[in-house]
Amino acid sequence: MTSTSGKPKMEKFGLQTDKSARVILFRNGDRYHVEGVHCLVHSSKFKTFDQLKLEFSKKVGLFTGNVQKVYSMDKKRIQDIKDFIDGHHYICCGAEPLNTEVIPKGIQDIFGKPEISEHDDEPKPSKPFVSSVPPPPSSSSSSSSSSSSSSTTSTSSPSVSSAPSPKKPVVSAYKESAVHSIDKFSVQTEKAKVIMCFRNGDRYHSGERATVHSTKFKTYDQLKEQLSKQVKLPTGPVRKLYLASSGKLVKTMEEIIDGEYYVCAGGETLNPDFSPTLSEHVKQKKLQEQEQQQASEQQKPQEQEMF
Image: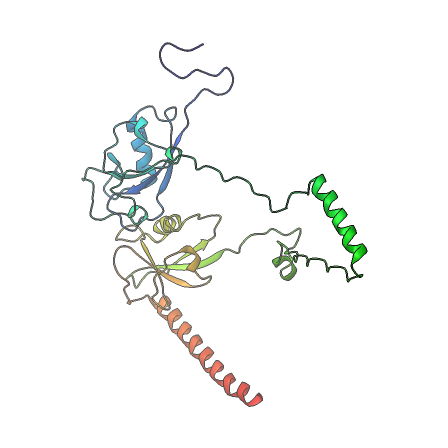
């Protein structure tokens, strides 16, 4: 039976509900926002658009206050919950207008262009399956080949049988298992990294201890949010992380070294005026590097004399 209202036919069994839209949110005018904030939008959870904007305010954390306006990538303002599309990116703004000059790094390639959802793409035609094994010979060809082979063997002199085709080497998918044996009953997980974080330009800060693990922080932005709560910079949230011994800017969470000291900064540059504890650590680190260089230089002539 078809419904006269034009709505799709309701199934007899199963949960009758709409699919939730998973959207990715970015802060307006924050060029250091790379990963974005994931949020699920569903009409049963948020009855009005104002309730949804309150949820966005808690998750995104705008510097200018609560979320009042939401824009899509083609600079169109979202007016209703139904306007959100699954998998699309959006910019959250407060009372200020949309900043088209300072764009977050995570959406610089797609900003200003209409997004294409995954279900809009036409499915590519699948290629026909071609078997690498040749088909078996037919009965007629097999009989003719057998007769010809018998005639040739009877007339010709006995020859050496043809050599069998070389077999392909079997490549194992577990090459690393031979070198690194995995313990059967141990917990297979990475070791957590413990670091000390200091405020940029604060000579009286004794440092904050932070534990970095891939299961606790899925993205680098989540780690910076946690450091913002612990370090409490006077200039705002943590946007940059510097290695204290070399002054190198940390760009990914994989670059963090266990047991090192780091300086947390906002939008400002690194201030070399460190606290006493941090400056002592930097001096000890440089002395260790000099000792390692001297030891390596002493080993080189000894190795040359041996050869």
